[in-house]
Amino acid sequence: MTERDKKRESEAPEKEHAAPELTTYIGPGNDLEGTMTFAGKTVIMGSSLRGRIASPDDVGQLYFGPESEVDGEVEAKDVTMAGKMRGTIESPKVTMAPTARFSGEIYTKKGLTVETGAKMSAKIKMKRKKKKQQKKPE
Image (cartoon, rainbow, N blue to C red):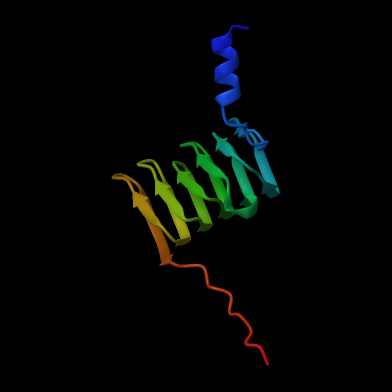
């Protein structure tokens, strides 16, 4: 190792020991039912899902491909729907791609993007997290 490399290494900030970003891919032809919990980025292509799909602590990014079908509840940090869904989406950021077909309720904080071509029949609620009330000292 050269003196120059040693100097760079000593000046570099220490990296935090964070878990690596996970990417999960569920391919076509799967039929899933129940509760799915995920972290990181998850892509669901051409699969049928019934039940609840959620990321812990609102950290996950979820993408449903054009051939996917979902019947249930979805909760994630970022949801992009390009397939068909009936149910509820709760996410700070929701995007409906041109191929999306959605029926149900959407609860979002930051916003909803509906691209030209997407079809929806939805109740949309822009909500903010409720602040916890502090107890007054007696």
